[in-house]
Image 1 (cartoon, chains in turn brown, yellow, red, orange):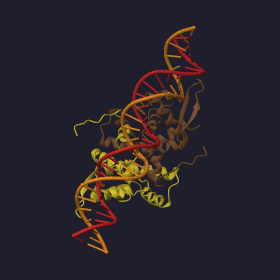
Image 2 (tube, rainbow over the protein chains, first blue to last red):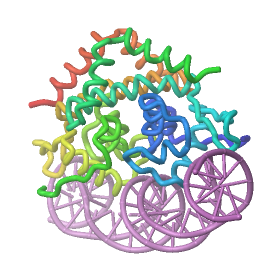
Image 3 (cartoon, rainbow over the protein chains, first blue to last red):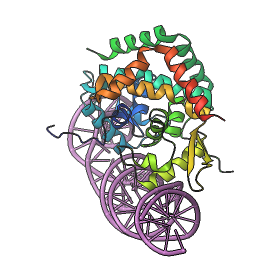
Image 4 (tube, rainbow over the protein chains, first blue to last red):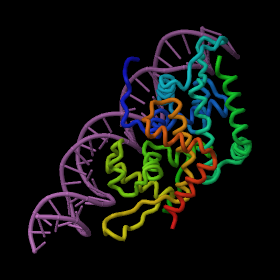
Length: 140
Length: 140
DNA sequence: TGCAACTAGTTTTATTTTGCAACTAGATTT
DNA sequence: AAATCTAGTTGCAAAATAAAACTAGTTGCA
């Protein structure tokens, strides 16, 4: 991992998008944060139907970027558990702002609308609570 | 524009990323919101050096999505002014959360760091003020 | 007035990313 | 023992982005 990544600029926006601005990263983070998914097979089953080669590639990049880490499942030799790092958990506010925007401008399904609205209605307190919860579940 | 866009899911995250999750949209929005750019040539000159065919294509998509609109420049028959709609201005909080994340996790240039930190330090009030300013500048 | 520089693109070709579907070797379940 | 599961891998196709050259018209300036 001696390869230094090349950047087109050092602007905050560019650096953020460079880290997680591909088509799938935030969707995988959502699967982990909102739906509690942690296995490769579970991510494959999301509604958006990511291809396995793309999932494999994204998970690797996300690990290299420091958003997630891998753990063996003690109950099954083949199963890998994917967990969020603190850096990954720090993406939660971005997911929330994305969701807020969608609630205002898109036709969102009712279940998600209620769930997201509940978190948003709780303000900063609610957001921090969710993040603390994620830390408890993911950081060992 | 009778073509109904197809969606892989109705999840808020997916709908948001479908609308602005490509490689360039938020960078162009940044150019408009943060750097006050409004002409094609100006966008071409950003540090990330977008290709003109990509810029042309993205601007069209952004207009179709309802983020921006075009206006003739009264002083020059060829010049087109690109302006943000309210829907586009509603992307500002997302840019701010992206920037916050970068300030924490990436090596951001000092000038941007100071500017972004100032806005973030002002909390909700500061954010709303920026958005009101954008509305005054862009909505006619 | 004529030419250079400018305007928002457009075109062509190349590269990268994503998509689709089938496959793999090993582990677990029936 | 065979079927099903695990996290991938592979090969090819489609879509998005990248790079560089080009275009027709407008403006500025000598």
